[in-house]
Length: 272
Image 1 (spheres, rainbow, N blue to C red):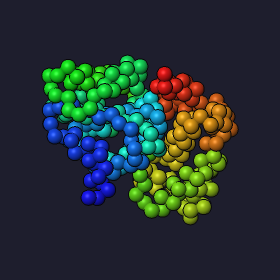
Image 2: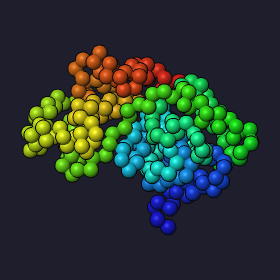
Image 3: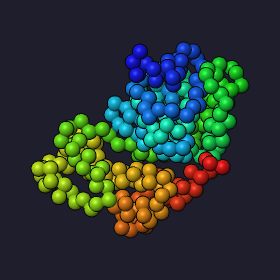
Image 4: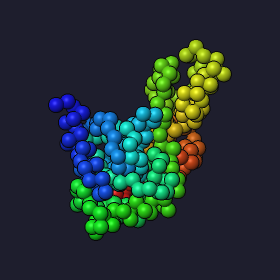
């Protein structure tokens, strides 16, 4: 039996679609650092506690921090990569209905508010198929039903995967130098591009500019560091290249919709 088959069985991936009309529920500690690429007919709502999870599709890598969930439409190939074996994953898999809200057709990362958090925690002891017309099915379906109403901001907590080999080298360089001041002109010169050709490469391959990519990458790293709680907000800002804490805080707010200190307060609620 191969690694992929072993992990799929361990994480009940093969059971998700056995009952096409049920909502499938699965809560468990990861226990591994990867669930390999797979797909299922049902849509997936994944909420995690205790660490950071990267979800990689064929086109993007999503960054799922604490106090957020990811919605993955049915049929989307994806792999799951937590930063720790001790991450708790809470999954609800929903059957696809006809004439659904367009919300359910798009991948996305969303903050989880107190109402949604309590509803998800209410499902804590459930596992397996929730049969249609059962009480637990109705409760889980209510979670799905309110998502388009309360999840109004699909956060840009994802980065596209570069297809061009040249861009892979540049991305690797940026990852190793998140705390440095990197001028676009210097970056182009270092890798043998004109500014114009490198700008076009970023736009064509990644669908965003260098500054957009680098800003998101820095903030994603900042979230990781904040969750580790080894550095203050000021120190985290400096590590990811911000000499001005207000500028860092404003940039963090534009991407996550909350200040770094407020984000940490929200994460603490999970531990109470």
